[in-house]
Image 1: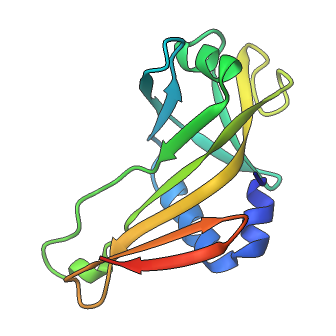
Image 2: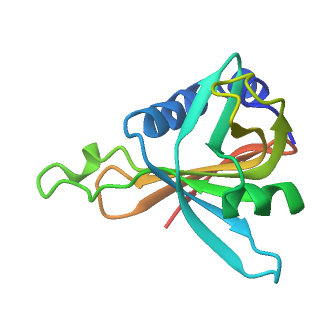
Length: 151
């Protein structure tokens, strides 16, 4: 697992696109694991700060409790449909997976919140190819770097 800065240093071009996808919209979707092992989907916001990807949430929320018990997570960027005209211009969508590491209260914002930094195990960007008759799926892991698949 790596910090955001390590991913950005390893693949500047892909990380720039992921950053744009996560900063173009405020709200995203995060999956955590409930106590019984089933998935929980929650809305979330992310912040990129000092080379780290940061999550903040009100203290004691179900997703914070999930992350404190089991730090595994996945985050999906806000997604919009490709435009009818010029579908190849669609920016795509990004997905991150990894684990949440607690940060001391008040280090990234209000002290009455739960704060986590995300350590990445995988990053995926899905977009339309050129011509827009196929998908390009770019995935990155610390072990193998970037791999591109066409579907």
